[in-house]
Length: 381
Image (cartoon, rainbow, N blue to C red):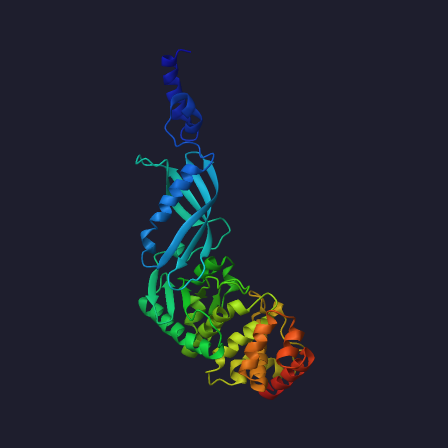
């Protein structure tokens, strides 16, 4: 067919089939579209441009090292999608980068010379959200803490910062080992917002005050975040909020001395021991679930197993596990001394628990369990 006579037919097809067929017909009729990103180079350039100027809603957050590593590029019609790993640090708080799996959506460039431009930046499918995905982030700085919040009043965030500032010295008194001595606390607008940050169902955290993110391992300290459940936290007394934040701050402090080998009863019990050291509450007041069990004639046969601390299970059973773990660490500190408890914690991350008990307390697990059961009768019976 004559090229001049063919052009109207091509334009008709474009009108009938656009936009999806525009890319297929581009080679025939010269339809304008970015080059196909077979190697992703143009998309990667657009993502790099996006990283160089983070969104305005991040302006108050002390970011540094903000970058994306594109891992895959997919074309869908006139759009492109890039999967990437976001890396960033909070200046003055993170010693290693925080990471986040992201998906960036791109559209054809606006005529300024770029083939592509980023139009959306969101969590990759199945990945946890970042706080700024949920709205504009407010920032409050304390003496030892950086508090980031969405949908919270300045007064609420300032109160959290003050409580975090009191938690850090309490942790220093319990854990006389080097650590960063500062906290990053995130306060989303709701329980659902908290769950989105942690990538789990909301019911997992219902009734909890806060949790701490970050992996164990003994290497450089990861980018820990204390994530507050605003609903559970608001229902606590002033003393309760202080205990919760001190507990979570202790996890941050002990992170590099914790490993997969550390028993959960020791990890959680130590964090509660640090939190309750300055509290006037006695064992029966601070361990009501376990007290009810003991007074009913039900004594735990062993120290709490790791599975007893799993979120989302029986809340009464989990409460007994936490309380029993605290009382076990309280017993170790009372009988062998605070320093011995700290040393036991460090050894238990490197050695089997029986070896750690023998080397630090010169006892064994059956003897410790018997002493713990006896203390439960005395303190809670």
